Image 1 (tube, one colour):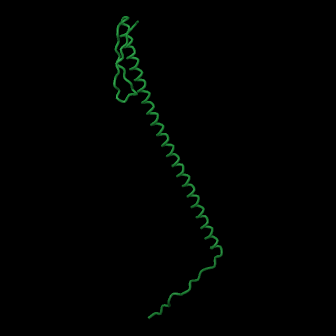
Image 2: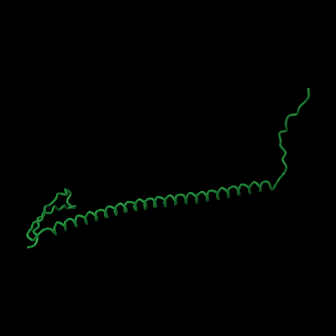
Image 3: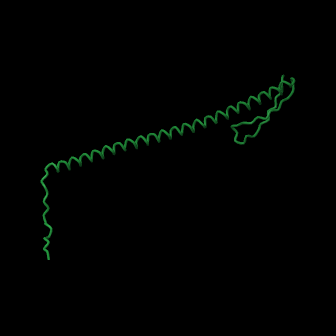
Length: 125
């Protein structure tokens, strides 16, 4: 049988004094790259949060603009109704003579019941 010697217990390596410095330099460079990447990510996230806040503000302004446009439309329609009612009233009043009575039904928007009040007016005298 052939004798096979056991593997050696000691490992021989060549002496490399710059290897330690190279390892340290690579570690520092990796740390700096990681720090730069983290700073870039923080800036990116901050910009995304800022743009999300601006988007929310713009959405709020759009909603407010829409509400104001609806109010304008309601007020314009209210003015049209008031003008038509005023024209009808003036037409009726133009046909009346002195001494005639006019009964008007008046509604108060301040009153919660919106109950009408009847106002009687005599023309002329």
